[in-house]
Length: 302
View: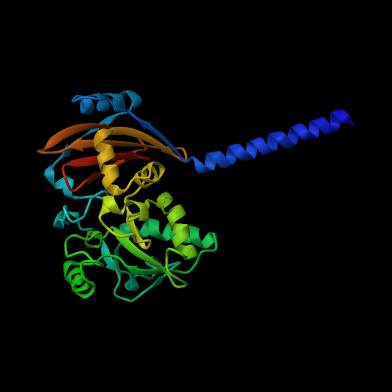
C-alpha cells in the first residue's frame, strides 16, 4: 500500500513538473541568437557568423539600392522622418467594398481604407480573438492619404494629430482599432491586443511608458504592422520601433526561432548601391525593408 501511494505521488509530481515545463515553453516562444562584436569590423564579422550558421545552403545575390531604404514594413515615420512616395503601400483598398476583408470586426464608416497585405494577418488576429471570446472590435482608421491627414490635422490640432506626410497612417501600415463597448485602455479588446498582437506581426506603436522615445502620447488603439519575427523580438526586449532599428544597427545579424520556425535578420547600411549574398534554403524566402533612414533589413524566413 505504501509503495502504491509513493508511486502515485511520484506520478503527480511528474505531471506537475511537465505542466510547468509546458507553461514555460508557451511563454518563451522566442529563441534569439545575437552575434555581436565590438569595433569597426562588426558588419563583416556579423555576416561571417551568419554564413557559418547556414553552411550548405545555396545563396542569392541581392542588389540593395537607395530606393530600398524607403520601402517596406519597418519604415520609421515620425517628425524627423517623413513618408516618401516609395513607401506607401500599393495594395490599399476601401474595405467596405471587399466583404472578405471585413470579418470579425466592424467599420466605423464605409470610407475606411487599408492595405490588403496588412489585413491578412489582421483577420487572423481577429479570428484568434474571437476564439478567446473577445468579439467587439471596430476599425476606426487605416490608410489616410495626405488630404485626409491634413483635414484631420486642421480639425484636431497638433496635440492630437500629425501633419500630412508625418503619420504612419500615410504609409498604410497602421490601424486604429477600437472597441464598441468601452475605451481601449479598459476594454477586453484592448487588453487582448496588448497581450497577443505581437504574435501576428503587430506592435502597440505608442506605449504608455515610452512617450519620451516615440514623442507621441499613449495611444492604446494604434497598432502598427512590422511582421514576424520583428514584432516578437520587440516584445521580448520591450523595444519601440525607434529602439529596435537602433538595436539592429548594433546587432546586424541575428537568428530568431519562433514556434520552431527559424528567421534570420540582417541589417546593411546602404549609402550607395551594394551587392550582398544571402544564404537561402529551398524552402526559404526573403523580404527587404528599409528603415527610412540609412539602411536595409533583410529577413529570411520559411
